Image (tube, rainbow, N blue to C red; front, side):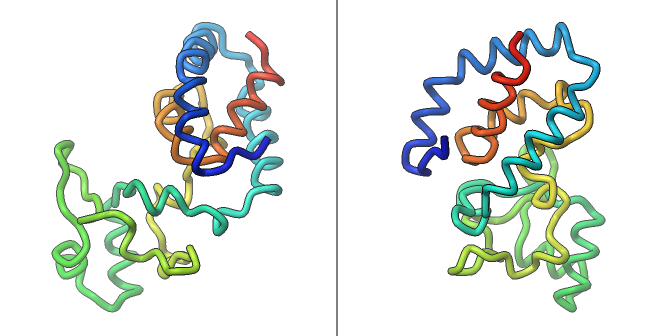
Length: 164
C-alpha cells in the first residue's frame, strides 16, 4: 500500500497505539537479525519510493545541523560557518542547531534539495529505517511515520515479516 500524503497523518494516528505496542515488544525481544531484515525492507521500499514525489520531511520538519554539517555546507556555499549559522539557523530548546523556519530554505520548487551533495547527516539518513540497532530508535520512527510514507510502509512490512 502506498499511502497518499493527505491520508498519511490519519493512517499513522490510527496505527500509533498498535505500532507503539509492537515496538515495546521488539525492545524486549529483539531478533538477532533485525538490522539485516530492516535493511532489506528499507532497500525494497526505496526502490519503489521517489522522495522527490513527496519531500514532506523537508516541508514540515527541520533537521539538526552538526558542527560538521555546518562546516561542510558553509564551505560549499562559500560562507564562513558563523555567517551560515546567522543566516539559516537558530538554537532550539535542546541547544541544537536547527533551521530558522520550515519548509527548508534549500528545498526547490521541484522538491529537489539545492545542497543535496552536502546536505546534513540527518537528511542523508532520514527516515532512519536502515539504521543499525534499529530497536533503539523506535521512538524516532514513531515520530517519522506521520511525516514519511516510506517510513509508514517500512513499519507495516516489518510487522508482517516479524510478527511478535
